[in-house]
Length: 438
Ligand code: MEV
Image (cartoon, rainbow, N blue to C red; front, side, top):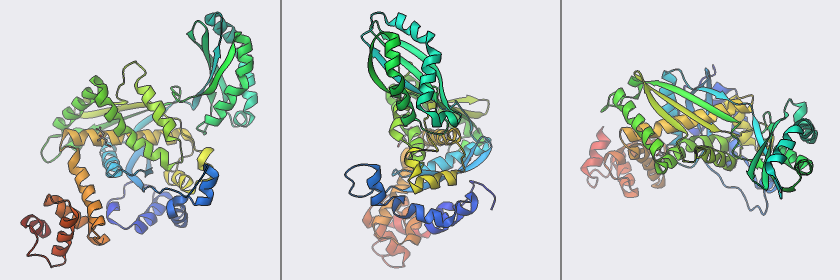
């Protein structure tokens, strides 16, 4: 089957059928998919090598977002997340974006920042000047600490001294980490150059560590969605665009709203970051520091009307790796990269950010139209039906019935099931009976 992320009816088939279909369209081996996702992909013995004092592992749902087109290529996108509706909403928004040509993404080179703090200076500005003059020597020292990275085409690229106070400066060493997230490489560089940097500056070594505000490793994603694609039964596409633009403005004016707006973006990004075995705390730290870089916490994505279309733009730092770290040992993370069909870390960042923009579009569109709860209720109803013991082939139907009847309870689900089984007509509410007939 040709590589595509358009798989209509995917949510209606069984887990086993979905695995086979994803194998067909991505080329990932069906046996590998089953093995890598068995029990969450990680046994206790392997987990014991990751962290300390291990008792076991902790599973989370692993789904895939569909309809995703980034820079002209289709991707089935693994997402690990416990929150209902995020995967469905991202897939749905990606379908709308696809009708406008898909996501366009551009990525900075994978440049991370090593911070070397120097204290006890007498004149930090003069020290900074001396460090600039010694740049070639410091860069050589940095490269010597990471020969493997240099052999792969990466390495130290620049130094940037920043004066923090009359007696303190921090030297940034900018390191191209290629396809690694880079934390270990950058920390190695920071520690390797620190003594010499302190000697040149004439001060004492302070902290030596990467910065998670990796603002030289940003990804920018845009999309354009035609108005008619956004319309609902009750609202025209242009009215929906106006509602989304107003929601964007609210987030631009109010940090309280911007925090929630950005949380919706990170719903999508974190899920991809987790599915690919990357460090989501690092990504979160970078995203929120970047959102506050002007001194005022702001939305990472904004929306505007351009003619009869909606235009969205997201920018954030995204330090993701496709080699090294957890990825080497976690079979599910390796599987995710195969399903995604990415060859490098920059492509992965472009896709993760696109899912972030899709998640944001889904949330602001829902709030500008029916409100967020309607979609959530459908998914909540499915969980309730499951908890009520409804068999798998009846879950969808029972969930629809209890939403329709506004009775999303365990008892409601049991009554709906009885009605479907031809029993319980006498005890069911008129709403449940009506819903069963639809
Ligand atoms: C919920 O996880 C995310 C939203 O609150 C995001 C938003 O309000 O934009 C729906």
